[in-house]
Length: 132
Ligand code: HEM
Image (cartoon, rainbow, N blue to C red; front, side, top):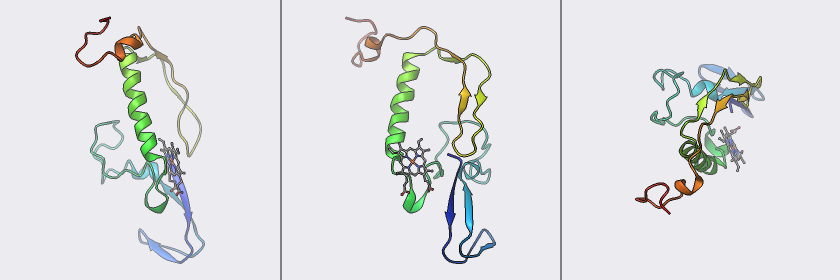
């Protein structure tokens, strides 16, 4: 989600700019998350980057209600996917979807390789994969 918007009921100043009451303001969350004053080398994808309150889920009273669920789903889905498909790899040039607010891909060619059997993923800790 790249942006959201707000309308101010009273005149206010933000970032040195006066916004008359009733202005419609676009807030570029994606740009804030790549602010080089906050994130060194901001265009480098680094999932281990220290989280300095990114605006991916918004902020304040309208902070995303589903943030906890979305984070949990991401942790479960990506760790499971990578354990099940350890050979998962890009197999072509991704094509971006032409959308402004909700970014994504129209096509993302991949190869999946040999999947690890589900039974091996669920083996109790300390059990060798494939052990009956
Ligand atoms: C990666 C997934 C998600 C992202 C990046 C995301 C992002 C956001 C952002 C940026 C806002 C704030 C919008 C604003 O201030 O104008 C928001 C609000 C909201 N999100 Fe999410 N969201 C995600 C998943 C979810 C899920 C899974 C749910 C529900 C199960 C959810 C429910 C909501 C609701 C109800 C609001 C409005 C809260 C309010 O206005 O008080 N979101 N989300």
